[in-house]
Image (tube, rainbow, N blue to C red; front, side):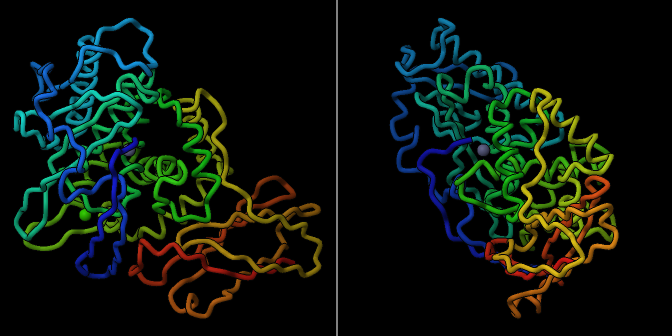
Length: 418
Ligand SMILES: [Ca+2]
Ligand SMILES: [Zn+2]
């Protein structure tokens, strides 16, 4: 969820066929060449207390028998009882993840190298740190990890199991690939969190709201934790599951397997991995266009899906639709405006309000930047909203499958309606 001592690394990806990826500083939350300066192994003597699981190779360490002063915990539990409860949640997360088909985390733990370590800390920040990577064939790396757990903070309490599952999935991700563009880490952890403990993530509503409020950003956009956008982007993975994978969540296992480095060869990026799993002929861009439509919740199947999502993760609240950027009252008279635009793969939602029906309404979108016109095309989709109103979804997509996933510049356009 939150990571302490986080920093970015510059990583250059090898060129891969059909894809040119410029990887910039994408993993502020996660990637470490070495451990952070302040890490639990600097002073291993402090971890005088420890509980080992008898069923999985996990140990929970704690330094003191005193519950921190700022604890939100009011259950009168001793620190040892809290550690025991934390351990059983980690065991649960381990089991759920393994049953789904995921690889086990690789432990980074100088105290006891074969046991995955969870350290109980005060405050609110929980996170997975992966360090001291092991080199595999082809110069790629496997990242052992450990977890910092704040069992007395705001991400514990009633949502503790949900948070542990989210964090544990980061440790699993590190085994497959810890150098992916950043957004996939939160997208995937939130998807798993909502899958295993739906309704227990107290931030679910704000995460989805932040995601739906910014459809002009690509669903894979890495906003560097400025908003909850990346957490809410799990909706895209939910869409993939429902639309292309028969509601079977283990497509996510195949996704992580397909994005892992191929020893002696190359390291595919997750977007490329998705394309290997999608039905024949369906590209990543196709899935984004279909997703842009789905997330309006205006069509019958999507409406049902949104109701089910609201019921399971939002205590039956309505799942919000994406923000509408412009509204036009269609009169037959020509109207136009210039827009700063959206990112590649992002969408603008434009509402047409018509007298009786929007059937005859014409919408034209033109580039204001001739460079973009070389590499990008406009995908326009129209969805009826009511008898006399429609939503036009405008999405710039790449003409070729080569694109830069880190490019967050906006593509300006002129829209004309009559
Ligand atoms: Ca990869
Ligand atoms: Zn996270």
